[in-house]
Structure formats: structure tokens, C-alpha cells
Image 1: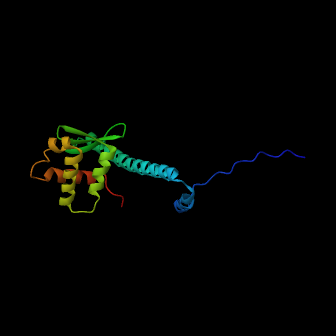
Image 2: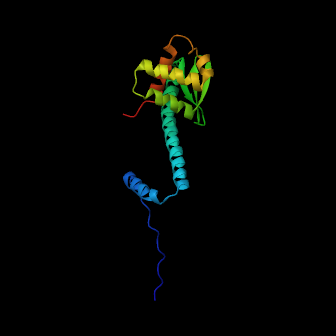
Image 3: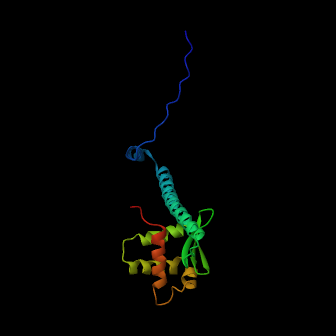
Length: 166
């Protein structure tokens, strides 16, 4: 009797998103609450990580454009966003003030700019968010005054730095 060749494992192909969703939905009735809670937490973490990856990719493009402008002798703008070397934090640079934001905080601000509301409403919401979540930035950048000019500038900068995909 000839020796059998060892079975070569078949390469698993990635499930199409719709097939993966269907498979997950089919398994949900079999899971207990602990399993569903675990999957929910993992999904939230994955969504957060996807948002961070998008922000990092956009920031890298912005950095490469900024470094090209710097080499060409163009002066850096007064208000800008710079990503840290580890990619987990961002600096909002306003003149000589450097304000550190986590990727999650930056994502929250970007979501406000993508709300589809008017420019004035977006500026108002950014001011409100900073007043509640980052009082230090709110006060240091003078957002507590009657003018919403700086908030509008920040909103426009966020929209330019992290544009929506077309």
C-alpha cells in the first residue's frame, strides 16, 4: 500500500463582508449575554481603531504636504494640526500655543465637522465641546469671548486636514 501524502491545508479565503455578516448574525442566537457583550466591546474597539487609522493616514498625507512646503520655503500656517511621531496624539498649534489632543478627542472634533450642519453651528458645537471636554484649550485660545472666529478657523482646519472620502 503506497504511503499517503500528507494533506495540505486548504488556504482559507477571506469572507466577503456580506457573508461574514450573515455568518455572525446566524451565530448570535447561540451566544449567551457574556459572549454578545464581548463581541460588542470588540466591535467598538475595532471601530475606534479604524477611525484612528483613517486619521493617521490623513495626517501622514498632511505631513508629507507640509514637509514639501517647508522645503520649498513656504512658511507654516499660524493655525495647524500636527500628528505626533507615535500617531496616537495630535497637536493643535495656534501661533505659539501647542495643545495636545488624543486621537479619540481629535476624532470627536472631526465628527462634529462632518455633521452636515451650517458653518456657524459647527463652530458653536466645537466651542461647546471644547468648553466641556477641554476647558484649558477653550480658555487658552480665547474661545470664551463673544467672537466665534477662532472656532470657525478650527472647524475649517479640521475639515481641510481630515476631509471626507469622496
